[in-house]
Length: 355
Image (cartoon, rainbow, N blue to C red; front, side):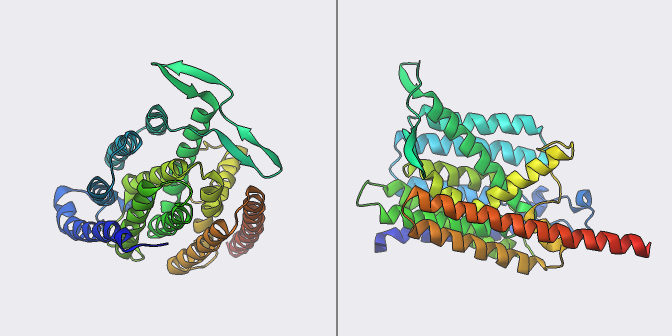
């Protein structure tokens, strides 16, 4: 049940984000914090960039105000600060993707070192998969190796999935709003089983901050979050889903469409002999634009899909139900992808005949 005391953290986060973004619109151009549209063949004027820094500061300040800083929360904030710092640098200097990957892994290991572990993952077809079978000792602390590997992979995947969503302004902030709101509602539902006060507060704060940011970067955008914001939001979503009790299936279902899109694009790049980590314009939202949808229509379609699967995640209790819902995402994605590629092929053939 949502309580009145739950409203103060998101309200503060929303206020700080709004004030911060207003200040950024005035100050970022003076500081040279602008995007580089010419690098992508765009003719518009540069607009303020790396606005994710404002998101990060609003979330950090609100968290320190309302959340008891346990060892886990402290590690989470340190890891998030590392991610934001390197991503902000990357927005300015274009760092090596391997360096960025190394930092992402380090951030995940910081969380693991704080004691965050997952004993088991639900299996929709039988007994759960246990992740505590291989144990190692590091500095007097017992680490479940499979758990550490799973957490690291999950965090890295979710960070990059959220980052790849940033191909259309407003997509990452909108999906983040929906996903963190769903995580908040899930934590509220399970509060009677285990105290999830930190998750409840931080998820609501992230949802509120993302919603305010959406106002500013919805098409046409006034400011862009850059990797600084998308990487931060992806890390927080992944980390909170773990701290909430290993809600892999729930978070995966909420982000299912985006995850399947990421897998699809990576496999396509590999089959074409391209680097799987090199960016391109083949993501689902890019294909929607190529198919003739406006940016606003593409955004609303992605929001609708995310809301539908967030609802399924909240209403379905068993791993089996979540698995089949995720399978439905895959089938829908495959069908839509094939349809878009077919339309794109028709247009290319038509252009070739004209030329």
